[in-house]
Length: 328
Ligand code: ASP
Image (cartoon, rainbow, N blue to C red; front, top):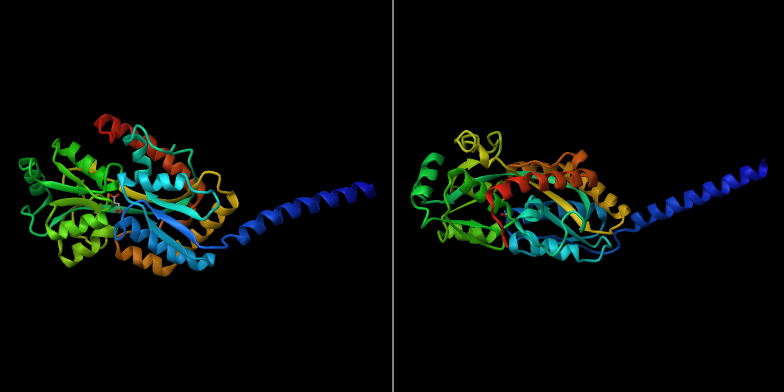
């Protein structure tokens, strides 16, 4: 009996020591700088969200998270870079809905979307606004639609490549108004916005994290928001549904990923840090000023992001296959 007790105590100690080793690994991590890949150019909306959370997470993790912009091919180049990175927790990815749409838009990708990553959590869901250069003629969204249809051969829409959120919004717009117009791809909508402001391109559909300041400053013309409700920061701006194009309703959700094989201790640590960052008052305020809000803590988890990615791949597969639009 005494021996049984002793053996029990020994195995309990072994279990405890294993648990401590695991926890110790998580506590030791991170021991150096982390790279957060943003699969779009600097200065754009995904970059803005990434820098906001990276700064807060750095404070909590006690190590700097530096943002590396790897733009091109609608976000698939940056995602591919992270899919191939060491699964040690020092290279992570902040991407958006494009992670799900690219899985169908590209019949061949250099990575297998649902098998190449581990999950950290959802970050935010950002509405988009259809914006045009300041001197674009149409005064409202119905007028804008009519103008685009009449001038389909000459009007130009900027996007961040096939698989980008701006491409998805444009695709929904083209299919809703049954018109094909010229699209101009960029490495991100940061540089696209520069060209819109300069008048080199006519219009674009982009996240409020890139458009809100320009709309407020009157440097671009805003036509409609892709959110189900009007935006708190622009209560006079109609939603796409109010303007008669409910098919364009879309929210651009963002998530953080790590390469496949990254340990659960690491993803759990990153997720806890993400949750703290999203609860920070400064982050909440900054996001509100940009027309959005952080994801609730329950969604800033590996399980919630995995479920979201899988359901969104299925949802957009149907839409994309019906539209018959592919990148390759
Ligand atoms: N808003 C861009 C997109 O179309 C990406 C970016 O530049 O952040 O997905």
